[in-house]
Image 1 (cartoon, rainbow, N blue to C red):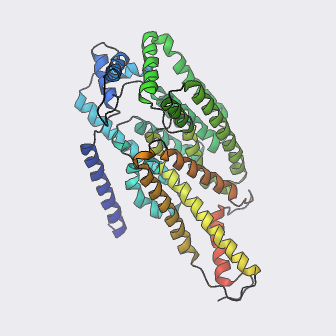
Image 2: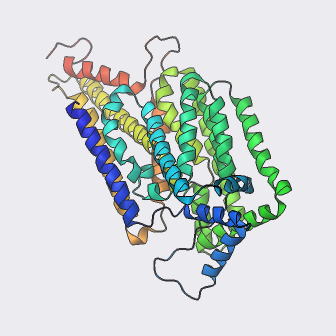
Length: 451
């Protein structure tokens, strides 16, 4: 085993030990607990929704709550999951728990694999050392969501596994199946159908049919389980009314603000989501046209497109952010590197225009690595430190990160040099600029003497 591989193995062992210690020290599995309670409810012939609503009302009716106390988590997946609960009730709890946590680990590794595949060969040299720590920073913000046991980790693992042949070979069939399966648990995941439209070819019809199928599966549930569906709606309303579980997307931030002000939030969040989705969707479609005309931008585009499809979700949570961590790292790195190289290139051009007699060589390769790394690290540390300040509770650092990196990704795509579609060696702007800057800075220009 090489020294590099030994370091990678050591980092993975340290990360695994840290996750286990975190699971022991913290109240782990808070999102899987209501699912286990629901399995027990259906095994006794009761309603998982009614039991959860009763627990939440009992908590709400208490005269006072201890500091740091939180409302109980309740089961509020759609009634289409009830047959699955009946099937799972046939197995012992220890077996279900073992299989579930094994699936969580496997799905998390699939998320990392998908993000790793979005990176270039050069980026993978440093990314491989950061992958073990992604678990602790979903969306680049420190959080213990990895030990929550939320089924979204498994769903995103399946979706990203199926997305890989989609963006590589335009084969999206398994992706559509995975999204339909995920929508049974979390219907807002249907917004991920925008991903093949943005990065694939001729996927409008297939994505539309898949979306219509997902909506139909949701629409028939009041007919198949009328009583359970009413209870499901009541549970969903209580989750927002009593636990303010809006998420940290733009509509969620507005909803939480109105909730704190004791104002009605339903209409406002709906309007906010429509405005946000239309604006973001329009920007994405315009940008995707630019990428289709210039295949050299595709490497930059894939992580940006995936980030935006998750931002189309009306309720973004830390477990959604977890799937975005590696793509966000790549977007930030590429944007910072491009900005650095543009500055170096402009400096070289300005020096030539001024007729500089002596242009000292600048180590472009070193600067293009360390300057973006330093800038990004300072922002990362500052925002995470701010997130831990008690009076920052009303400010969504997660949303700040998402919007900043979204802006950086869009800027990168629109600042990149447009290569001719027929050019055999088309490549992104930041790669070509690095080469041209090295020539300019070491030779004193195209016709300057070598120094």
